[in-house]
Image (cartoon, rainbow over all chains, first blue to last red; front, top):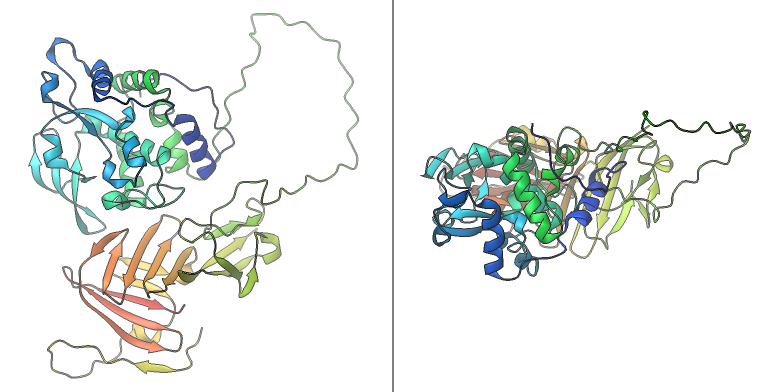
Length: 349
Length: 119
């Protein structure tokens, strides 16, 4: 795998899942957007220029000979977003790729995937019918050499432009509300493409060019393992702290006068348990650990925030300590103006 | 949860011989679930939200992977992860005080899906 380019100074060490995603979004939301189409074209053609032979085309093996045959293609369709975000996603350079002007006709707002029955095939990319859990749906499949590039764009858009309610085919890739942002089908597909086609020199150069214009690039291009901690093999694990860099062994350090060790406190005060307001909320899930989760929070992207809650039939008005409920199965129920429902959770040590 | 009253609902037939069917084994089990055609969402497995809105639309979400299934018995609409699955048939096969058994048959695959809810 090729070495990566720019590495941000922020560290995500100690973060996991939703908190990790939020920090990434905060760091990588563009600080500036290009407003004019002319400047957009200029920015894209700058990094995609392949010399006198034209411009790199994400949807053809041949270069686009001139700007007349080139379109600024949003990889993720703006029709998936509500206003006003739909305007931003067409200006974010991370989501814009150069493509020949025949692509839009054949791809439309299809979701990415493995095309089983092609309706269009130019030998480089295909559009047609694919399957999600035995369900037929329209899909497009990029060429192998750009699948990773495309996947990392979808990942970026999920984190930086989340929606509480996706439109059109967006619901087939993304989830409403917060983490994990990408549905199971999307996660499996995008992770596979991300792994099979790692970041290469062209993608790094593109990322650098975008960063220079917008103030930020794509975190999934710059930090190769972020996707694994969000959705892949390390999902749910704490992102590791950066290695501590010690003093240069070639430079002798003065030998300080050794100070005596302070006497340990024989009766230290226990660490106070953070209140629900002081800590990160844990979205509702199936299995809880008393030791690591500590609290049961009543929050889910699938349940209205103003709901009334009960646990094992007992009304509750705020988060509960898992130790109060005890190990075993418990029923969490809710009701609000629009709906009512329940789920079973398991609490373990 | 036990059902105190049980009523068998005669299926709403289109054509057919008019001979009543024997209740399937699914009707003897009132545990909340969506099963059939590779679907296997059971409330007792944990981590799966079963909910119903004011218009009787039933939603099921498996939290570990956000797998979502929705069934609207009023308009016989069924979807998986937001994508609609065409139905040939959707009928309320059995109803008790607090439990309903819906049987769905896919239009393309002819597979049977059982929606059992006691909310």
